[in-house]
Image (cartoon, rainbow, N blue to C red; front, side, top):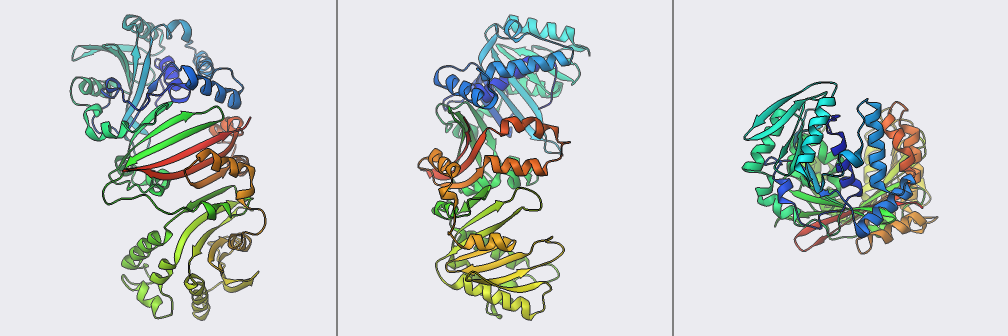
Length: 519
């Protein structure tokens, strides 16, 4: 978010919404969404004053993660300290709290070339508009860089300061926008058409979870287009795992605090052509090696592989295989890609290691027939007979297959092996062989994995991250110049596990992401 000293106290309050607030309970505030421009990609809303169990849970999280009695007070304390460092101190209790209302929201319309949110607007409900206006006036007067007065459609505002932001009172709401143009757009939305008027927004936000801390509306298709596919690469798998086609979809994510965890519950409406995956890869995930710091499973792998193979056959391999020739060429050599795809059932990927040099992992596939194992054998023979450089036969621990070494792969070979009803494709021989066997200690025997499965309840687990092991690797890989990461390390140390699961409820695809916290 673009930062401004004038907006700092209000942003402190909104931070309490996002981390320690009391959610809207599945109902959108049409007033707050009324400031968001039509077609906004993201809209976040919630209450600023936590009460009851939500406050207790938020404070419990603050105690576990930061050793603080109150999460809201901790946030205010840190932001007041930041303001003092900037030479423009404020006192939240006397200057902001007396007029701060119950609800707040932030929205942005699109992203820039670097995928940073732009056209951002923040709206906060006030209980005393006059006192809020006095606060705006006093902060503008104290600013090191001047503010100019402006007026638009009967709304007075100020614009300027170090970031060129615009701020003003619109009826009972304090509105802050990243510049004058965006402020005027917020006024236009309030007085005319806004995100709140769009039926797709109304339908989506109505599915927010009860008892949520905050609710986030996402235009998934818009985000994918605006970021040129980068959003799909970074977060798309979670939605795809729930059977959501990102191209036209919207979703709502509800943040739900517990005394020992933070849960993000996702919901997205399915179209008639979509359905969530029907299989369950949790047993396969649980059979993976216990020293894996991360594992992700996927059911109905056959259908996904068929789609990928059909697309690859259609496009061909530039300089190697012409379009529409891959399947027929391999078929003539005894490798039937369609039969291979039909024989596969579930898949899972795991990673292990504590440093860049020890980092390795494997893709493990299960098959209901011998087709996959036979294909692995045929492919190995084909590569060796054609003189492909770096290919070596592998026979170890009852498994058979081949390995490939090259400069592009680095120090470890790519190993493809099969045994019984499993096929493993690993970066290194050891993880590939480990993926073929459930012997030895497995994830299902690990305390943190058991806790992750229990946290998901009836939702089958589809992804797992061991918090301490993943952080140990990250500390070995992330340079100290990345100060943001290293400042967050003390808090990341409190994460015991991250669990992901997906399913469906009627016409809704659902997913959960839960971060379990240590004592």
